[in-house]
Image (cartoon, rainbow, N blue to C red; front, side):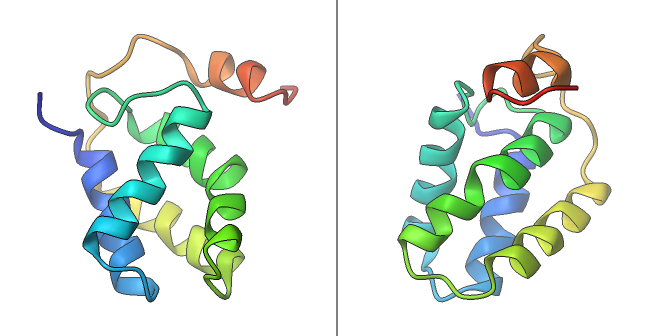
Length: 103
């Protein structure tokens, strides 16, 4: 199954905004999604924003990527052009609860 447009957008932005190559960027985003219990083929824009804010900074820091906060903010802004995918039926509230946050 093809990856969602939100996933592809974030991977392209990560590759462009960091020293990670295409494979490293896509793998890092997949690991972050897996940590949130999501799949690249079904992740929606809203779910991806949560992952970028809550999970991806730690993955980037582990890989030695500098300016993680600024990069993640830019990745979130880049998602504003992405149409909401029909992807997973899970709500952003459910993602926050699974990540241990409160609403």
